[in-house]
Amino acid sequence: MISQLGNPWWFYVLLGVAAGVLSGVMGVGSGIILVPTLVLFCSFGQKSAQGMSLAVMVPMALVGALRYWKIPNIEMSISVIGLIVCGALIGALVGTELAGRLPNHILRKVFAAVLIIAAVRMFTTSARPKQRGLDNNSVEQKSISSVNNGDIQNESKI
Image (cartoon, rainbow, N blue to C red; front, side):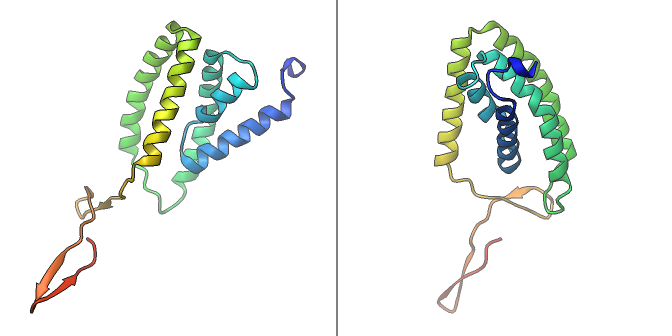
């Protein structure tokens, strides 16, 4: 089986390491690196690459999530995770059905467009971090200025 691979076995191991590092550092799915590499350099079809990427993602994501879970200063909400999983399972069923019906060349272009849009949005959007209020709701940071005896004093951000 290994002798039938188009690339040496270690190429796929290194690809997995790159996908794992990228996923762990940035929290992105391995599809960002796996799908283009499997299609462009390993001669797999778009749908095959996407399927293999999803199969790789399951164990990789579990290991990564458990590692993040053990870091004390990282907040992970089980209820938010559970709700997203419910939606993601439904979305995966719909998405795989849709992918099965779309021609490879259309699916490949849609995949590339999504990557480009995401990259441009992340590069150009400056997201302000939000702090948690006493009621655990997100609040934006705002500066408060006060006037005392004609002097303007800037208070710290709340």
